[in-house]
Length: 238
Image 1 (cartoon, rainbow, N blue to C red):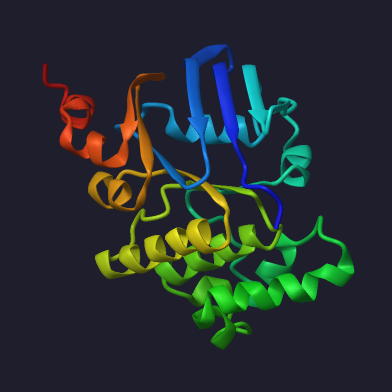
Image 2: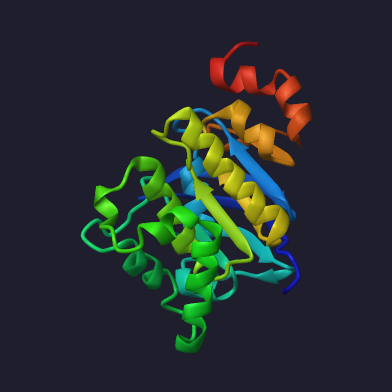
């Protein structure tokens, strides 16, 4: 297995149509699980999209010390990044297997069967339902398909945007346990944006709090959970 990914973000800025959303973002994503927390509209999704090469940005993004080019999603995937976008974005009229196979479009043809077998080992429920149309599955099962599809590219850095959104509590626990296993056993570095603060910090190693496009707190997961930074960011209290 290749070395675990180490991402450094320096003075990153990004926005839409001339409107600045992120300003002077400095974060470091080391092996393990890093979570980005913050209220709605803080810029969390924009941050992941900018890192994944899906929108213009300025500043530096370095993967293992080497610059990642801005607005070049294909190069980001080739370098080992994978993004599971908010809302899953599956192809509902295609089967589970077909959705997963699309995740390996940059993988050499001879390698795809091994990747598919690994995905089914990680997600046994999907193996059982590999011929089911993705659009007929529950929200939690669809999220599993989205994560498994991202894993088809054998990423070294997996980025998850609100993976628990709309899921029942039991399914959230199951999904986060899978994310933990991917990070711990497969050595994939994970960067996760999440609204469920307590559950996210319970599985993470470290976290950042994003508010109005700026990082306002950073610490170990346990320390953040015990601090006032979360309460201030979400409730606006002094």
